[in-house]
Length: 159
Image 1 (cartoon, rainbow, N blue to C red):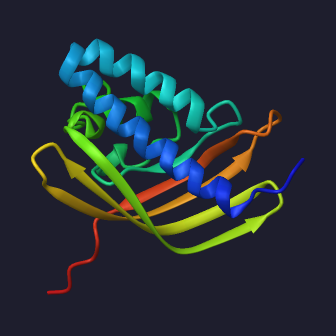
Image 2: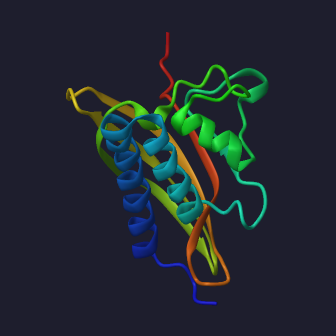
Image 3: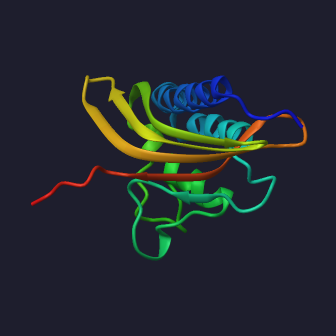
């Protein structure tokens, strides 16, 4: 197994951001069914649910549904419209047009890597949201980088 490279981490973040934008555009052009199709493809391509539970803590999740170790929980977060996750408004269908990341630090050990930094989202109206984010990756048997940890939170606001 080839070790993960810094460039692969850059590429993985770009793929994730581009997929989020694609989900938003699919929703605007074809509704929830189109957005769900694109989100399903993105989850299968980027996340490691085929390797086991993914340690996913979305930005806007709370209570008993804060953590999303299942694919179904992740899909609900990105597109909403789930009876099992009624508080999810669909983060991926919020009109995103650009996703940029800024690295604080990364750690690579063979086929496992961690990344931590900021991700800035811009919507179609020019509104910007910046979040603190950590991703953990593992290469699968085919050499594809898979997200196995995804933690996101709004920046701390001191009182």
